[in-house]
Length: 483
Image 1 (cartoon, helix red, strand yellow):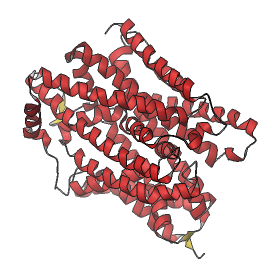
Image 2 (tube, helix red, strand yellow):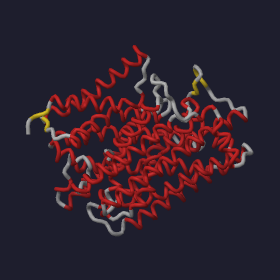
Image 3 (cartoon, rainbow, N blue to C red):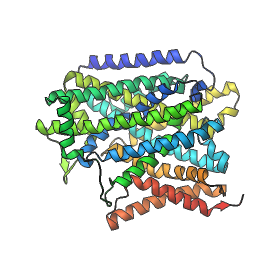
Image 4 (tube, rainbow, N blue to C red):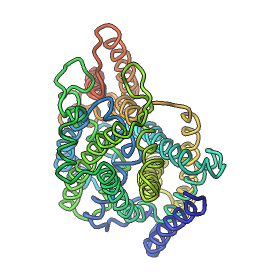
């Protein structure tokens, strides 16, 4: 595509976001940035959360990883459905009962201030790295596909994206994001369908022929029963359940949108609808993954391998889209990357700002005239942290979705352990020892995972979040106290 066309597409897309921001910012309070005035339509929130849940990571990593791990990610998707049931019927009632803005306020009620700060800090660390890695992949795609041709350095691209997000979210925050994410989810799902249609047409397949071709391909295996494998069914299903509870139910960026809904019953509908929306979208990604490898095979496109495994699988879908699917495919892919980038990062930045402002700065107790000034300073700091992390990881390789889930296993595991102990026991804790117990659980999880791989050739896989949560609970039981 020409530089002019790329610029016009980005300008038109961003202008649409700014128009939505203008409409949603007309009636704001000093808390609107954080709670959206608690008046968002539940169905709009549910649909918009697709964009946050998918991101550019899912857009390229899930289809690309099919070549190495077949469609085993479907086992993980089944676990996510169970996880969303837990969130809807266990966590949502608690959040609405306490009327929280930061969901980690629950830990303050249950275990005290130290546990509250510990849980929030683990979220801040995990979300900072997770959001930055998602942003990293998006920037790499944009840089490789478009901005290198314009001779724009990658660090300038990072700054441009962060500034654009700041411009349309700065005033009304989560209220604007609810609407912009719904728009971006619509673009994202549409582009997935366009990609599938493009490949179907290129391969000369009918609808029934496409489904038959996908189902009969060796990469279409759905279930792995090998207990030593990292993609074993039970490991994937349980991991999907626990990671969903952690990365959705215990994640400020996802729950903050849900908490902008006025009624608890509507918030439950939102979570359940989102669960099935995202499961459907991710299953489409798996089917798309099989199709892109079939397309590469039939067209003699060489894909790099090492020891029988495809390498740099995150590059395969962009490669085919930009060089083999024509101008429509390239434009659709550009829009998808932009949509997924903004939809997944804007909410994360807002959530990090909210969590730090409420959990560490007690912004709700500050004078009204100070709140906006304080929020702006925190928001600037969050953007600087995002920029630094992306720069540090710029030369990383491999499937980023795997890296994100591994990091989540170590950082959300203690958070999950704290919540499970709080929800299903009446134990009180010696507060000053809570941070040590949580850090030790993460460290021991890492050591045990490495040991199992080296000695027993047993890959714990995404189940490290389960191991981490169990160890956290055990260490917390050691420091329990009488009420």
